[in-house]
Amino acid sequence: MRKKRDAGRLQTLLRISVANAVVVFSTFYSDWTLRVVTLAYAGELIILMLVVQARVLAAKRMPGSRGADDGRRLRRGKFNALMIALLIYPLFAGVAAVVVFGDVHDWYVPRSILLSLCLAWLTFLVSHTLDFIATLRIGAYDELIGDRRVMAPLWRWPVMIFAFLGAAFERDTGQEFMPWYFILILAAMAYVNIRLQVAEMDAIRATVRRKQ
Image (cartoon, rainbow, N blue to C red; front, side):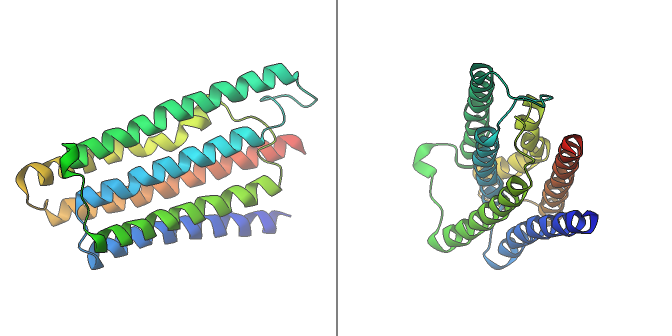
């Protein structure tokens, strides 16, 4: 059983690593700028919002409960968690879009870059969806996740702030930011993505252990 969990953990880390590798590859071979990288990770936030909502909807009981919960209490808990996700995640993604583009008339991405951007979003979507399905099958989402785990994906935000600074510079000056800064942002985002995934897997393992 332990070997199976370790294999699942490795597969999850491999999927999220591949998703980040697609972003890194695209930056070098599709002429991405920090503005586009910021959009890529802002899109991932929206995908994570959908995953969080799916986790909430899949819950069958309140946190810490071992028996059947009052249906009204569970529905209220789900509603609160869904509203938090619906209000906060689009707000953060919207701020990213405004910082990247500024005026609505400037919301334009060349077709070639848009295609590679869509590929990055698709890779994130597949990665997080497969992870959700694998975790759902072992019953780790039977318990309603708390507010801390609803908000956990937003810990990508501190790193994204530095990406915003570079994106704003590119928007205002029309020049690309310094290469070393670009590489630092990519490395930091990849690290944060993988680190948060590890933390989530540890939380899932703790939930499964409590059930046993």
